[in-house]
Length: 166
Image 1 (tube, rainbow, N blue to C red):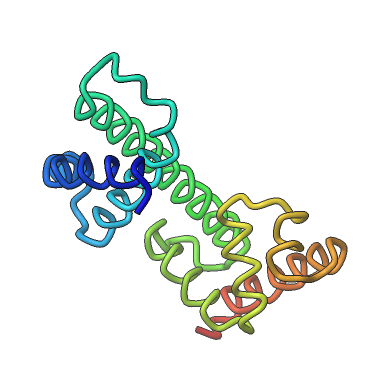
Image 2: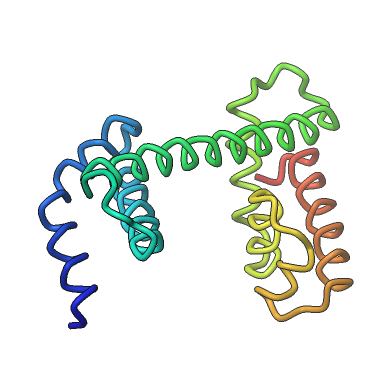
């Protein structure tokens, strides 16, 4: 191992439990905590070259942990809001006006899971606010093909939710 990598590994080893506990304060779900912890370690690694030692490593790492946690939570919240808004849009087109928002989200998730795999991937990326250009790069499709597939997948989802095909 290179000297810098060994130093980083040693510093993380000394602080890993505290970093993980900080992650636990922000999220209740164990899998989310693990995801946040991994993302935090990645961010610490990315910034390690710029660490000047003006503060202790633990203070610097904890600041990154907190900032990563706040960004993680903010991103999750935006995704949940977008999903809720999309579900509400679909729900407005549905005749059953008494379905509550969480039920609509569950119906949307069920409908998405019934799409063909490529459409499911594309719609999940749309919900993640991925641009059609990025979706094209991820899937290997042309950008115009991606836009057509998004439109068709949305139509399929609306039909499934309106027709009760779930």
